[in-house]
Image (cartoon, rainbow, N blue to C red; front, side, top):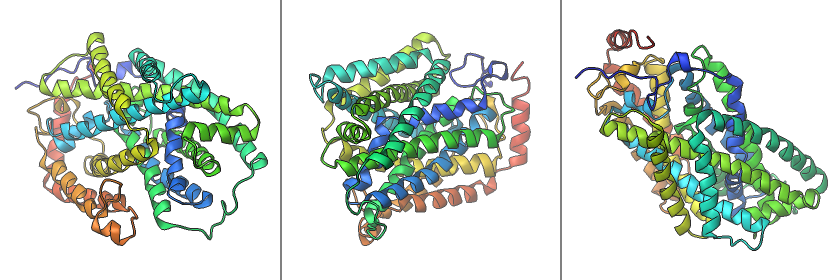
Length: 470
């Protein structure tokens, strides 16, 4: 079979002639991508399990430091290859085998947007009591606004994210100054002698999982940057934006929940913000809601790319406006449907989702990063990635084996409301599965790749991509 031509309007590859933007644009995308209402829920988990404010805050910061490290390294792949994150999985898993990780990605997109819809309805109820906290109309309208932004695409999403980032920096700065000057915290909130293992580890790995989960599409928003953007620059602009935005907003959730543990998230944040000065709670809610809209749009955009890539795997296609809108419509229907049927117990369900995503993404992130930075050192053939009969194969046993072994190695360490493994039970519910899955997946993949003729593969890749930009 002949190698397919990669056209400038491919659903995936961005030619060098179409690259634009500045590397610093990455920080507002990921700052505002984190500084929204859903992130509050992550910071609340440790408190709801009985942890105190001090140790939950430490767990939030440590988890964000860990998870953002992997996320930011995925971001650096975008300028080098000009491809969305999920397409980059074909060299590790095969042309068809990559559908495995794309299915995982779709779980994240749909799951997060369903929870975003539910949280938006709760927030609108908090802002206007005449709107039900489970209003179907509110859920649908919120989702429609987000999907409309996604229709406008990459550049408009970048612009909206920058606007939200500047707004949220101002709002969060006021809250932070006020929190430590005007708020009276509960007795023992900052007592470091009140350490509890399970709440601490649950909070730490929930924060890490939340950050790692953005890895599936972080390079979707760096792939239009010029190829001469360095790895260090793209890493740090992504890392700083995502870490500061994520940790800052999670800590707001931690503080709000510690002050009002019986209230829902929206009500707790309004209560805590009004303690800074009366009426500031509504400002926080509106700012967080605007951020939630742009983040939901990012999820829709990523879901659209993934759905089109799935369709392209079954039958090669060229992107059109109609196909993009159709894929966005499908993502909208599925995620909104889940939101309309979801349980009212938001935090418990959100904790379940974070646990599942942590288990599913840990092997993939290890395999993808090891392949890019250690095995192939960033040398791939763009044409062969789009060739069903190409050198990367339809099913790549190396990536599939490493994923299966890495996932299986974590099962005894799973600790979630749905299932607790024997090691987790022995550890009194502590979840350390990520610390096991990362090295096991990476080592198995490295051992499996020892048989690859990398020099021969590189020669083939260079020949295949000759004249690609012409």
